[in-house]
Length: 231
Image (cartoon, rainbow, N blue to C red; front, side):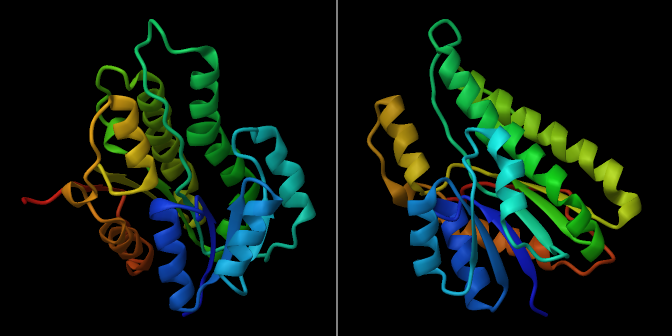
């Protein structure tokens, strides 16, 4: 059955791979893009998709962006796949690094979900958060990113309890290190060589996400951890 999916982060990595799989199977996509140029690129790559321009680094822009868009009355799923990472020790990490990561990784998912909840409730749909292993344990230099992802877990857990009476399922997926442009950036910040073959393929994470989205309605995957397999 064709579903309507609102997706952030479709321009790269896991989000892009997910958008391709959803489009290939005929789902209706609403893709959130940072600016008009990225929205145009998304519309070209995914013909038939609806694009929505909202800068997740500025959560205050989301309400107006949604009001200006022609969105369906029902949304089967919201998938929050966008994210940013800036590493550094607490003693040196500037305020801007904290603010950007909290805005994109936590506050904007909460704000986007808040505004779309009536449409998700109408569909008895699902909210899925692509989190991170850093959302479970934060290591040195990962304080800001880890805090944003720990917060995202708290958001999902609270939302799950609140929305159960409306028939809304809430899932958190925790991918381990995945071969994406974000992972290349992490390695650059860590000062290490990047070898994509050493990490999870984004398509494997997408398979896990689709399993959670497609699970029959009598069950819900609340938390799904995906880690690199043995090499």
